[in-house]
Each structure stands twice: as C-alpha cells, then as structure tokens.
Length: 252
Image 1 (cartoon, one colour):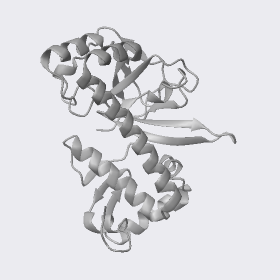
Image 2 (cartoon, helix red, strand yellow):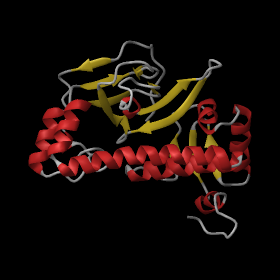
Image 3 (cartoon, helix red, strand yellow):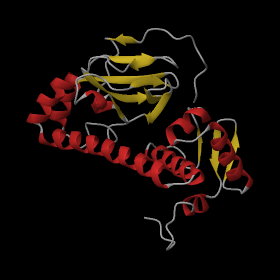
C-alpha cells in the first residue's frame, strides 16, 4: 500500500485524467454526498483535471494563491507550517475522501504547505465555481458547510489534545483517530500502515521524537499494540480507549 521513495518532481495536472464524482467509491466521504443524478452530473462537469503527485511533492505551498480545493482520491498527505524559529510544524494528516486547501478561503492565499506522504492523486475543484453551484444546489451547500465544520471541529480537537493530554494519551488518541478513519473507508480498524514518520507524529502531537518512541514502546510492552517498523496492529482496542476515559470511567 505504501510507495517507495522517488525523486521529487513538479506536480503534474493531467487534463485527460477526468474523474467523475458519480463513479467514485469515496462519494459518501466527500463533497457530493446526497446529491441526485442531475445535480451529480453538474458537479461532475465542475471537477477539473486530476493531479497526480509523487511522494514528497507539494500540492501547494504557503503563500500560493488560493483557487481550488482538492479532494484526496488516493494516497496520504500532511499539512505543515513554518514556525518563527524555522521548524516545520505539522498541522494535520489527510487521507482518501478528505478535503485539502480550505486554509486559503479567508485570505485567498494558502497559509500552510500540503505535501504528499506517498504517491497520491487528488481531484481539483475550482472554489469560485463550487460556491456558485452550491448556491443553486442547497444539498451541496449544506454538505460544503458540513465539511468546513468538520475541519473546525478537528482543529478544536487538536487544540484540546495538545492542551490537556499527557504524552501517552495524545498518542492513543492519534491511533484511535486513524483507526476510525480507516474503518470509515472500508479498511481494517485494527491494522494499518503509518505513512508518516514518528518525527512527524511528534510534531503534530507537540511531542519530542524520543517521547513518541517511548510511548510506542510502552504500548507494545503492555500488549496494547504490535509495531513492526511503520506497520501498526491494535491488539487491545478497549484498553487503548481506556487511556482516554475520564475519571468516572465513561468514554464520551
């Protein structure tokens, strides 16, 4: 499932790579959810050429003009920002069925970088045209708002994660979140391959690399997970969830 490391080249927009939302197996996770056949056809006509990226390529960079949002059709991405002291701070990981690029809506310029963590493919959706179409198709507008809300909720969740949780709780929350997202896509919720490095996980969770490695080792020693390089198997899901339980023992 994962890609080999390949030379970094300029991303290619492929006009001939036309992807129809109506035929996509990710439609229930992406923008077109709930549209009838006529409205789906209108959305299909809006989608621009697909874009294929090799591992390590940028989909866009901070400061680039905002023109489109991108639906991840296959592969895995990270978003990051450059901090004042020159470090790359990871702000999120995105997989198939999720939307990239909404960081540019407010300022009309992207505020972060989006980098492919493996060979990937996205669908390009011109945002101005999408706004016009969504004003005519209320179900599309409603779903667009839901997608934006989901991003806000995710950002809030990360803030809570970094502000209130201990290191092992942060890693448990991260693994459980990946488990849920893989499950929603029809993959195993208990066995998956990590596309990101432990250093990138640490950057996202606000932890040092050594702390992330110790937490992984402790989880494995206690029989919660099994780790072979980047392959993770959740052995005891209930106990992993229990790390996030509040004092009364109930998990929200």
